[in-house]
Figure 1 (tube, rainbow, N blue to C red):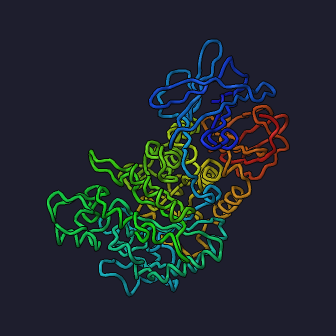
Figure 2 (cartoon, rainbow, N blue to C red):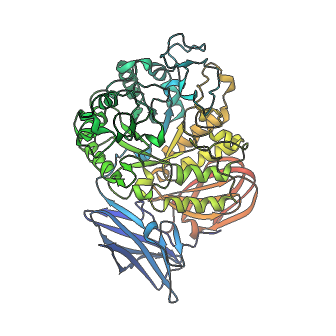
Figure 3 (cartoon, rainbow, N blue to C red):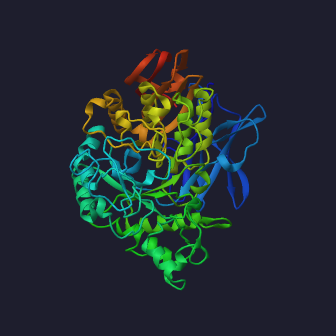
Amino acid sequence: MRFRHDPHHDGSPDHVTLHEHHARLRVRVPGGADGVYLRVVEDGEARLVETEVEAERDGVVVYGVDLPLLPVVTPYRFAIIRDRRYTWLNQEGPHDHEVTDDGDFRILEAPNPPSWVTGTSVYQVFPDRFARDDDGVEPPTEHPEWALPRSWNDEPAGFGPLAPREYFGGTLEGVRRRLEHLVELGVEVLYMTPFFPAGSTHRYDASSFDEVDPWLGGDAALSRLIERARELGLRVMGDLTTNHTGDRHEWFLAARADADSPEAGFYHFVDHPDDYVSWLGVRSLPKLDHTDPGLRERMYEADDSVLLARLVGEDALDGWRIDVANMTGRLGALDINHEVSGRIAERVREVAPQAWLLGEHFYDAGPDTRHDGWHGVMNYAGFTRPVWAWLNTGPEGVRYAATHTSAPLPSQGAVETVRALRATNAGMPWRVRTHSVNALSTHDSARFRTAVGDPLLQILGVAAQATLPGVPFVFAGDEIGLTGRDGENSRTPMPWHRPETWDREVFEAHRRLLALRRELPALSEGGLRWLDAGEHHMTFLRTLGEQVVLAHLTDGAHGPTSATATDLGLREATVMESVGEVEVSFDDGVELSARGPGLVIAVGSRDGL
């Protein structure tokens, strides 16, 4: 499927120039049109505004129009008229039929998220499994009363009642001592799953939000870790559950002990004290009630609240990943999710304007991101699942995420993946997409290496992380080829003592591709224009100002595919990265073919529209 002659617009600086309360929009139309109109909806009513020709070259016409911005969010799309027929252009692409408003472009009229986010990359650590104080491998001799001590060489059991109790003994001091590994890899943000005291190694069942778990080293260990990270130029993010606490949490104990206590209003009791609402029916995770003013005060309203207190001071975190953000403030007919996320964003901006708010969201995040709330999401629907569906060649029974479903089955090819990427990201404002993360694996999923099997296909996935819009996200161990069949089994201890088992080729590919993303601003800030997709390949451009980056990713052999110089709009192209059996030549355009899986990333200067 060829997209190169399609009209194009996206939310990048090449196409949207923001001014106070209005924006200048530009849409690229190969071959021109009889007319191009901006469609904007205000107070529920749509209106059309005619654009004007802004530039023209080699048959490509750019139309421009001024758009007054509405409070909070402005939705729009374009109507392109040719031969008395119209084409709608929205975030999913061009359509020759009527479409809903769901895929419209959207501009958020709200203060920008932290400026550092789009140029960074994230490394996820599950503290119990990353590194121990002493680098020992025997089961810990000291451990919490609930724990089942395991050897550092043991394989996590996988889904089951014992999984949350498996204790390997990793600590924050262990993380601190291994930070140079992150620097060598080339990531800039350390994100850790919860560090609060709890009754499990995943620690999403916090018993307190006021201290760091002593089994991880306590508050002093976190301070030393953050101090060392700062010295190395790294940022540190925490993980917080705004949807629930653990059933041993001090708030919940007080709530159950006294129905008239302030804390009793923090939870959804059906029949006090034993009948209460919990996360997906898991009784150890009682659900928080954000209609309660007292809970809001302690969670995020007060300057010394749980969420805000750790974002200020010498050992401040650089942001939070919000666990099950999509469920926060929702219960049946009650839905104040947008109100809660909006207020959290407002308070964080007041107290720590450079802190990143990243919401966990397994499914369609579009409807929850069209307001001033989470800066970005974990883009499982808009990146992880489509890439898995394309490249999944692993064994049957590999579980996707923390579910009992199988991993996404192989799709009909790269062209289907491109359609999925366009469709799943269409409902999300561009600004939110660029502040969201592109993960191949997390602590809640099977390892990507297990899903694809082939190291070269894993590298292809990493290239997608580095070249598509969004922030690359690496789960500790992916960079050395660790495997895992589900979200518990994948929480594998890092084999520091067995370096001979590391996949050095995969590590070096991570390092090169993350460095390339840092080097080329178009990969972090630029727009996305699709050129071509077939059964085995996808080709697209990332553009920013004078810089144009061409990315060609293929999972198998394919015949020649080409684009003209006008299609590309670049000159003096230089291949920056080439892996596998891909052949590329630049001669008044580009021609690409492949004898097997691989990738090419090239950069050039803009020479056209």
